[in-house]
Length: 86
Image (cartoon, rainbow, N blue to C red; front, side, top):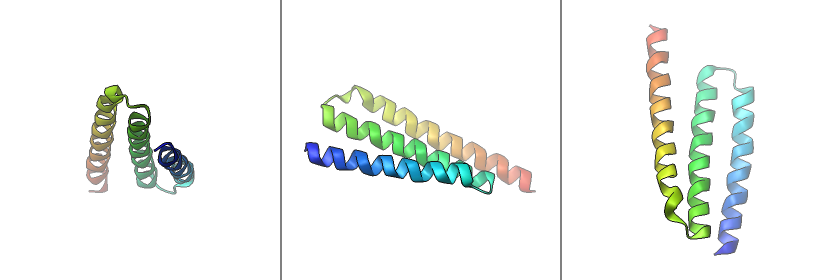
């Protein structure tokens, strides 16, 4: 099980690095918003991997909170972006 957790952590770190490039080099605001939303999802997945690795379920409310913040942030940005396009 430790090998699986380490492989998952390495993949999540590489995804975070690639997503950070998208945030920094994104030509538009929506590219950056998608990148930030992806980083929030990667962080939630990282917390879930940590919960499995350490057998500690106290971080699971943090995973739910991060998912909620990511969803609400994306919905708010898309709503205001649609309003600006009109």
